[in-house]
Figure (cartoon, rainbow, N blue to C red):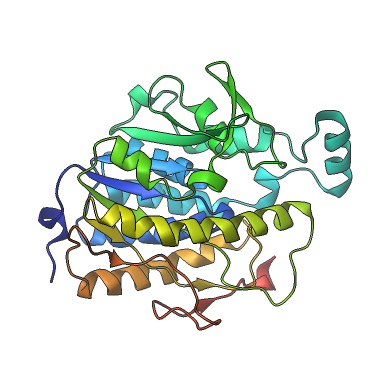
Length: 309
């Protein structure tokens, strides 16, 4: 069995992608990594991965971080983050130009984290955002913690951007949904990639503006990850974790997202049990994708359980 704790060059960066409600997948990944004895020296995240990553950076042990995140995702509901219904969304658009206010998102962030500054965290965290006016990627790793997290999770068109250092910032998913370059820029000698991915396929088109916006954006994001990951692996060892297929889910379906945790833990544990240490020039693992609608070999299909919602 591979000795993951000793085998990866230090410092090891955990890189957490965006993915909206699929962020629950990263909890299962973290549980499997903890079981395998793998620990990060630094954490880099964007969008929902920045919030999950902040919890990892805050806790002393990966086991404690994974347990805290599992509790958060088990309790999380769509109304917590997206409190505006269709009527309220219309009023919000007329008043602010955006579908949702940030009060629900802010409450989730502040109840999930004790720390209010990057300096209060246990290990270094980099939150990746995008400058709204230039679309350039920006990194934040010092000062107040909550505003960059709000910016990193501000889905374009859904949440308003956040003013940081005199500039408006939003979700960086469209330009760096898997922030590999940011991890390299922070000095990582090897990467462990926790890519929540996207919806594998739908039987019916997305319903509503938020789902349609996210769905089209995630398609483009997937192509970038497929291209960029091998290029980064030419520079440093990259362990790219698998995930089970998530089909017929809304990217905003927080009510059933916790169902993804257990299957993901099993898939990643099986992968780590047989995978080789990554080396420069060759990925260990691969971004989740489908060829001609063939289901990924890394795990079974996970569909939402509507019986309890």
